[in-house]
Length: 193
Image 1 (spheres, rainbow, N blue to C red):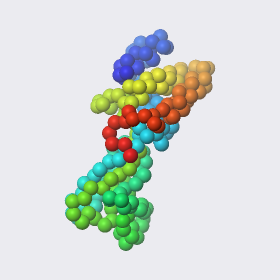
Image 2 (image 1 turned 30 degrees about the horizontal axis):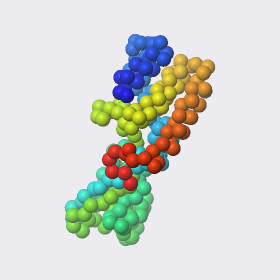
Image 3 (image 1 turned 120 degrees about the vertical axis):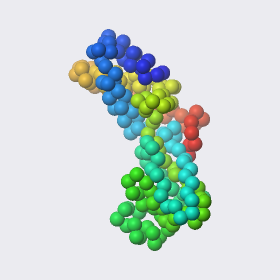
Image 4 (image 1 turned 135 degrees about the vertical axis):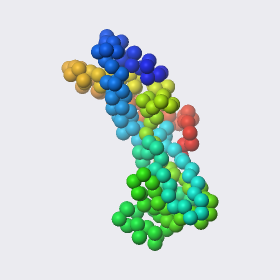
């Protein structure tokens, strides 16, 4: 289901058109709905990935992956790197293998001794329907009703509908159901952990 199809379905539900329920309002609703997805599905296997990052000799900076929610581990081979706070950079450099977070990147200790590939085990936010590419994700593709209920709740809340609490509970119920989907199924994309 595309974003355009989702928006048309929500407008039809409320008997509204693009003038009374513009895309910009529904875009905010998608962002809010996806925020719920990322919180409720934080430990779902579909959001967990293993990312490889090569470094040349002497390099020590690994960029933070786009859409990062949680960094579980940085590894080189079977060695896990311990994380230290930025304020303890000197301590981290004296206790390798370790790393610190510098905001948009990680600094590892020691620096790569030759060309080496590090792995990051991470949880990434769901691909947003608001992104130009890919413009869909596994929830919009396989569980369209969850997006639909999220946007119905969002619009009802904007309209101050007395039914908003019921719609919220319905959205949370289908989101909880989604949280148990996929644990034993192999329909992931990318490189799962």
